[in-house]
Amino acid sequence: MSAIFQNILSHPEIAAIWSDTGRTSFYLEFERALALVQADLGIIPREAADAIAEFCSDVSNVDLEDLREQTEKIGYPVLGLVKQIVRHVNAKAPGCGEWAHWGATTQDVTDTATVLQLRQTVGIITASLDAIIINLRSLANAHKATPMAARSNLQQAVPITFGFKLARLLCTFQRHHERLLQLKPRLFVLQFGGAAGTLATLPADKALQCQAALAQALQLAPPEIAWHTERDRFAELAGFFTLLSSTCAKFALDMKLLMQSEIGEVSEPFYEHRGSSSTMPQKRNPISCAYVSAIATAVRQYSTTIYEAMVADHERSTGPWEVEWIVLPEICTLTGAALKHTRDLVAGLQVHPETMMRNLDITKGGIVAEAVMMGLAPQIGRQVAHDVVYEICRQSTENNVDLLHLLCADERVMSAGLLKARLEQLCDPKNYLGLSVEMVELRSGHENPPGAFEDFREPLTWNRLPVPADLWETTQPTRVTKSKGSLKHMIFK
Image (cartoon, rainbow, N blue to C red; front, top):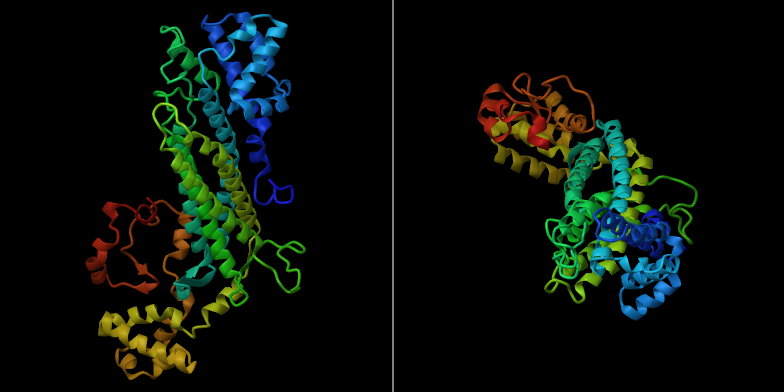
């Protein structure tokens, strides 16, 4: 990775895990644990195990340049490492080095080391994910009642709150947190079966004991059976990282659109020269959002490659396995970088409520056309109301006249019995936020009294419009009943 871009398009801590030194240290951890476990079971001599463990306790004992040369010559790093262990241990305790790597194969060491690398990576990813969730919850709660325009097909749709927009993102990240917890037991699994996975080189009465003890020593789960060419574990993690980074990219996309000069509803965290242009002094580009978008695109492409690695031949593959060596480190470091940028964006996002409110007025009332339509619907029918309001909205746009003014002047609207005061209420975007605030409170940790959303019968306000009791009875099956659960269950379960 470029020294210039290593803190932008990578994650230094995660990159260290996947470095030559990091990977080799996990190889050594496997060999050390294997030797000690086998000595406990009487498979290899204790003296040999102690000597092997001593060498494997410090990665600085390994000659990485020699390992590089051996890897280029052999094709895999494990045999070159085992040769160094044998040579150094034999030099101190003649013959003891020959007991290293007993009953194991190259892929046992490599796969288990990869699992250990992924475990450390997931720990860092989890910390970033937790920080994003905490900051999103706080930001969503702070702006639970901040009105803004929802956008559909890049056009203003209806009013929502900025907190509601963030709460949807919060729920997505919370689902990712659940996914991560669910996949860990499937991912953190030992690989140890020997040449074809049958443990044939170990004493039959001790082979499975050795496997279980090695798993315990490395704090991994023992495998159900060998998985040398069953690569779903790593593919699942790659898919999860794709979901996670793509969610970061969705957030980045929304934020950079809201940062457009003509909209200006949010800004990235500010510090001097951040996002500056080399020629346009006024520019403040959404640079963090741009990086997140680019990084997530790369993760999606790399993850596709990981799925190719699943198509592995027979019991030990010829090529697909090596694909993982290329792309797994990239997926991990890129995902870490995407989360790091997203964490900083959420923590320092600058929100401009005044601009959000000003933008709600640019359609001159058009953004609440649905509210007006639903206000008219009980008197003249929903489809008729839709067509009437549609026509008036076109007039408002073409003539640059407020919707309220045209509504008050329209005979069809007036004959429906809606007074001007009621039309003014319907045309105020702040009165058409639906359950934005309540939904945010459910997800932002806001305390509600027990049963706060259990029963909507009295009084019920749906989208801030009064619903008569008889209408509630006819529409109840399409929404939620007390017997089916609360609003919380309807929306979030």
